[in-house]
Image 1 (cartoon, rainbow, N blue to C red):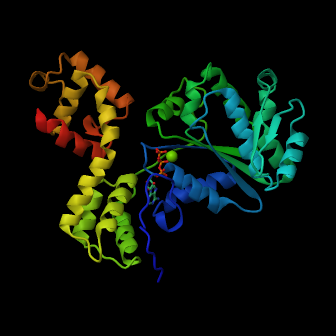
Image 2: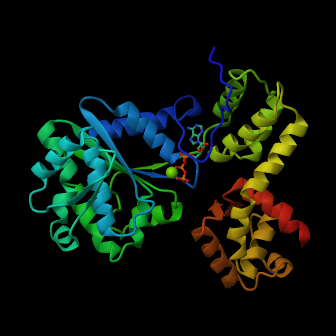
Image 3: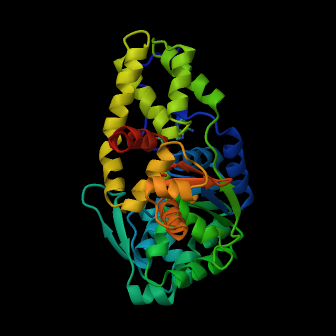
Length: 381
Ligand SMILES: Nc1ncnc2c1ncn2[C@@H]1O[C@H](COP(=O)(O)OP(=O)(O)OP(=O)(O)O)[C@@H](O)[C@H]1O
Ligand SMILES: [Mg+2]
């Protein structure tokens, strides 16, 4: 049996291998899209497991006839930066040798001469930039790179772009989106997997009929990992590290975290850390307190910027009113103003990804934020 001494629960970065559970059908669907050259858009609220899933499917799909390029648009603010990250990511899967990468770049990029700076000491580190005027004029040559390389080598290329919604903040973003779409949709040897953590912005980009990326590919809405899978995972992770936890506590973890991937791992991590042999109720309570405390700064920041009516609206939801928030009684009781106000507040909180509305029922998106809100805001009013 595998014996681990370090904490077997991870959170805050993409998880792999034994830390990764479930997602079999989603992994299969992504792999099949990668192999068949079908573009994918992956949507879910924050920290449910998009990045982990794409890494998993990408590494499983990689073979001698298929390569998967990754890049994160997290820090990318302009079209120009996008082009250099894109080019670097694509080159990275063509060869591990810098010399070879540069040769390939020259072979396939004829109209533009990128500026290359090679890192000192580390040969594989290099930066790549374009003359902006040149790049803009020949953007299609840059964007066509994966398809051209794939066509010439017979090795398919999948380009996975994390935090893709950032392109919506570029100057003249709509024109850029049109350009991307028109070039990418002609690619027969390369395909694209686009995902990002701003659920609402991603929906705007891909689910609006008027937007260039509408119906770009297979739109996958990621679900939460099922309770049964979590339960098996948590117990196994405890046992393989020489500790134990009973079913009741496992259920409590899953229920408090509302099956939210990040929080299930974080709470399990904190319980494991405090457990010598067997997890107990007091350990659970102390771990939960710590989890709320560790996230409190973030929650405070989210809350500070809210208007009084937004706060009042959330108080009503936190107190258990998930429906009829624009009824005269609730509007009066919670100081929500008019029903037009309520509509505005809802829209705002939806945009900010604080609440979700399904079948007219309002709920907090983040289960631990809801807990914190009840303990720190609702309690004092
Ligand atoms: N398949 C999985 N099995 C176990 N834990 C997972 C899984 N997927 C995600 N997690 C947990 O959730 C956390 C967040 O995962 P990940 O970063 O993949 O999500 P994300 O949706 O890309 O997040 P973000 O919205 O912040 O980009 C991980 O650090 C891990 O703790
Ligand atoms: Mg992510």
